[in-house]
Length: 203
Ligand SMILES: Cc1cc2nc3c(=O)[nH]c(=O)nc-3n(C[C@H](O)[C@H](O)[C@H](O)COP(=O)(O)O)c2cc1C
View 1 (cartoon, protein in one colour):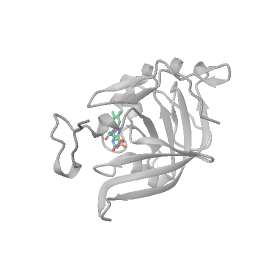
View 2: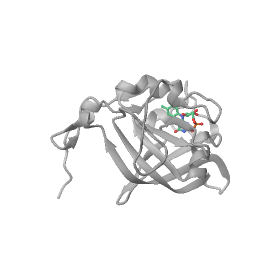
View 3: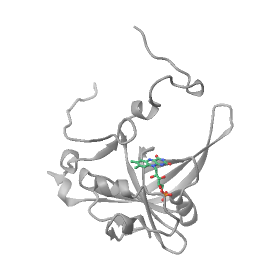
């Protein structure tokens, strides 16, 4: 069996860097935060995931530079992770605009903030779900030689969870009704969840 092998440090020899197309689909953490003045910020992060569920913890990674989200969270210790359904795809994308700190992406994308219960940053109204988080740690990443790289992982503990009632069916979160959106493939590629199948672990 032949395969295409490459060492990332030496180049991929393909039309585009395939890393993010292989590590896919990635859920999108749509992060809301506030700066010290209480001005709102909202941005999508697809290097995002849950880390554990007892207690529930999430993480997202900022690369290239320390962006507004991480700076705000470092200052205030709080953030909200909103989850994106297909119905908010366009608006989510608009919130990735690079704008100065203090300019609210809620306003830019025409999104309504909804109050959170336990943290100051608001949620995205009509998001499929939102998780209120308290900051645990910000980890500057290092490569395998111990050299600092331009990436930081923010880890938060989830202290409150909102689920949009529209997407609860028979006591379950209905991911296909929510049409959860994930980042997939190359620039501009996304996938929405339209079906699931069941498989159970061996006992
Ligand atoms: C779907 C999507 C996923 C993204 N994921 C990341 C990511 O994981 N890490 C990152 O640093 N930037 C990511 N970005 C880019 C940021 O959203 C963008 O740089 C944004 O302006 C950061 O906003 P902030 O400075 O308000 O935090 C993503 C953009 C989109 C549209």
